[in-house]
Image 1 (tube, rainbow, N blue to C red):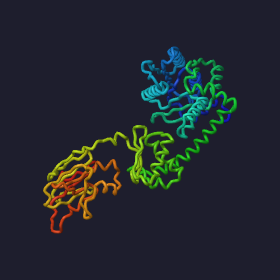
Image 2: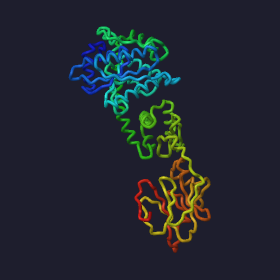
Image 3: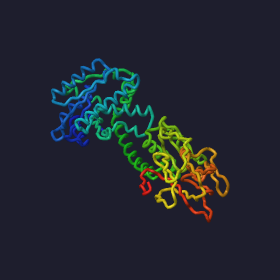
Image 4: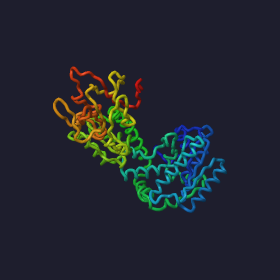
Length: 463
């Protein structure tokens, strides 16, 4: 909007109409400051066709002695104007030693969501204005981060999935709100903590923004214009990047070969979106580290610690993220069980193995080892370092078999092997059978070993 110092009543009506709230019940966050008291007044002046059922929520953060009386005034105001009032105190004993501002925000919005759920209210309104927008964008610029953050505060967005958060004063300057309040004799309170330079936002408000406004009187208008252009560009770019990521996606993560065919810009943009989808925003240095790992063709596997909770991994043809907790599952290395006829052994919650007579029904997805009557003893255990499988070409290390099959290192330790009474491996389950297990022409198959995935299996008659 070119002129932000506009007729508040008329333009507020137009903005509110675009929000699509109409006459639905709303919850208004009111602190008693000029911004929220003006918002409350404007909402009550809406025409009948737009006027909503108004609920007011005030949080006493107990950061200032006077906050108790300010909350009391908002309560009296609501009673006078027949508005439903809700309040809560964030007791001083509950304040953290550090990060009070963020902790207060979390407490505040949790309170709002509780009210909205209780009274079935879908729309939350806050009194963020154009000066808040400038402060927010400058803070994002100073701290760095994702380009999307430079869009600043949005006019309307989803809130905790089930609600909408709207800011109908976003295109109005702070000065215009003061002017409206004074003209309409609206009582409001000034937060004394806003006068200090303890917080970055206050320092920008007191020292930086006044200078910028002096140099560029239409600073607010220019900012809105840039944000609209940026939003348009990002909408187009995000749509294309999302399609690229969908083409990379597989059941095992993301296709490395496909990613390597992308342009340099597409590589970084798609990887940034993959990170956002899986673990949230990451910094550019970590993104660069991930790109280097994926581009390194001489290193088929690798991993990078992300935020202390996740692992970014590359494993042969795939890459993606794993939760570190899920990667720390300990393998029971001393697990060893003898296979007995017509008995299943549960290897894990998801798999089992058993020895049965030939002719026993098997499932389509079962892996089966055929045996002659010569085999007297069989056991099953996890693969161990140094294990070798006898092949026609001689002993072959199980580790090499798994590497050749591009089995990720974190899954190799989970592989099962079946051996005979002479401790010779007959089967790397699911991967390769020993030539010892092959029968002579005159040998008759008497037994089969069945390996079966339990999840989603169809039960057979012999179970």
